[in-house]
Image (cartoon, rainbow, N blue to C red; front, top):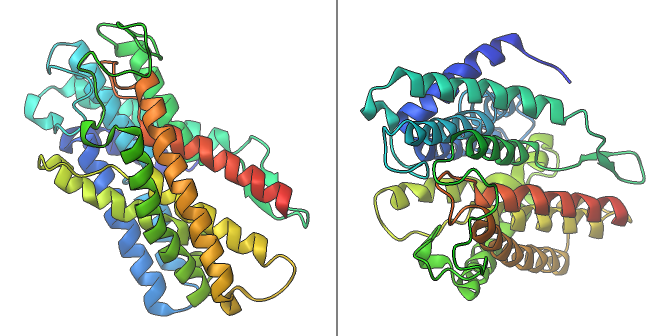
Length: 336
């Protein structure tokens, strides 16, 4: 584990800035940053350390890292509701600069710093590895940190309830008949699965195309699965504008990751990824789309259990991403 003191200091500002512009807006900028960096990787056609560092620092580091800016901003939102400055701690699309309260920004900054530190600590946990000793990882540490940050904010700043699960006023956790919702226009089980499959199909293909087209670019090989996640993050612009846009970043990232892993499993016996056959690509893309549907269902399930009825935000996509990433890494470790 390495701690960068400069990053630690900047993380405080990032959490506060995320609250000021609105947590959801901060998350959208993460998508912009990734796609900008990916453009740099594609433009060179070979390894580009500068573009890779841009992604690591701006998209996932102390500038817009979701575990820092998004999580810190969401904690600031929960705190603002606890203090009575805003109506609800789930108003993560609200720029908190408008309430003109310095204590809100300070709380968000503290959570931003905490998010940076905790994500670093998670790297001490033993990772899955393949038979040849290649380290895979054990989960999406950024998503896991987001979840834990949101849980802590609920425990500290919940108004009506500080429970992580529920409350369930109707006694039926999975039935939303009490006016509670996360994203109402996609909460039907069939729609959650459908959005996951369809968006997963598209971005599983996009990730597979990237790794097959740029087989010698290690940065693209390691980051291609994030392309759908980034595009999905950008679509939240329209949700912020009040349009009934689906929330799909947990679906597209898991679909793409599953597809990339399936490509590697198929090629473990030999052969270059740049020479992958159309049949191998079809299998990988369909495998990814199925996992996109699963992620849609998992996200909706966990929303009903932990988010829809709470008065602070515990992020269903982050819950789905870290849990299914862990599963996929375990599958890869067992299969390779």
